Length: 464
Image (cartoon, rainbow, N blue to C red; front, side, top):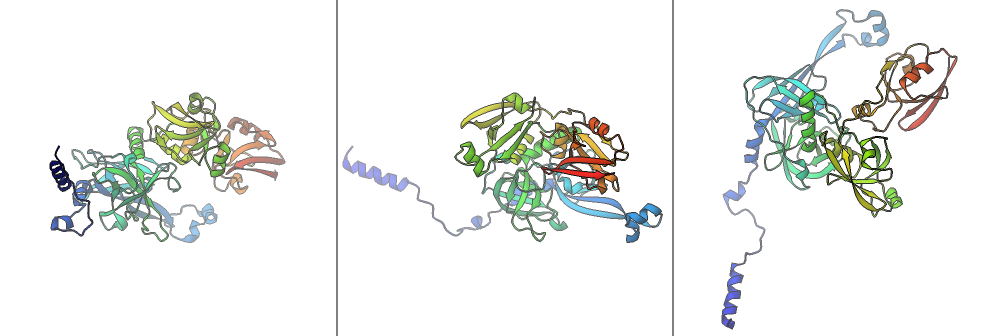
């Protein structure tokens, strides 16, 4: 190759190479008119307004609301009156047959539910099922032969911090409104608005009335159900939270089949790995979830998990705290297996855990206690994995717990509370409801009670 030809080739490559991008103001009308309107046109028809109506009976006079007066007069005609409570929220059509997903707190205790579409058509709807633990509910529009617009479910696990999103709902009842923002954070677990927490955080404006509305990505897919805001005055401060579709998908499937959500049972108590724990375990940094105890014959035990293991991922998805672990398991369907990644003695191991429903073992044996004893008026149950899952408690808890307490009962006057676990009665261990009934069957001049409340052991002596 001659020197002149080489120089010519270098000059040709220099001319053909793309110039570096230069920041500049918009140069044309087309650049100025960039808009989210195409996405909004695509998704807005599937976002609905939800109006609920509830009739409550209230006393016509504050005096007759007092339990003392009601004891003598009861519900005297004319002294009570019905009052209608109304509330509003948003929802998302996910089925052409009129299936709507919204928040549990939007339709809680509602007697009537009305769904209003973006084209102003109104339909009555029935509640198919509602799950308080995840704050999700499924409705079905009462309309035969109608085909409704729908919003396809996207993959919330593909979201990244910084992605653009749109929030659509009915804030303050002003009508359908679209706000735009970015994903500010993922897997927020310290927001106490449900028992299964791993929220998408966004700065798209979310206000009262947006609850149950859609959080959509730029492909026009549903990635979350708007559920809560962080606010000191009731308005948007730029921190909103949405339930990821990874959880919405499994909850909707469970509610649509039988009106009840059954989540996989692990059978292990866990705790967050703090900096001190990480140092004690020889970890370079706080990571994962520490297994503190494993229930006998549970899926965790059968998989080989042991006390002291540190679970770091579920099916390749990282978990950083017990709430994140519970969330990941709750997104999985029963009948299959989950691959748990864990650290043991500094080495990474994999464990295959069967996804089974929590068992009703031992039977609950729900019993209301009567007679002359400190627990008169208390409803006792045997704890089992199915019940602890329903109540959002540690699945490894066992023994006897107070489920309810009747108003004005002896148990209430003595300060006993729902959630208290019975440990001993008159220094004898309480291992079942049947044993509790036996220990309470006599009339004694003196009672000694030991209970567990919020992790503390309390003992009370009662003189007959």
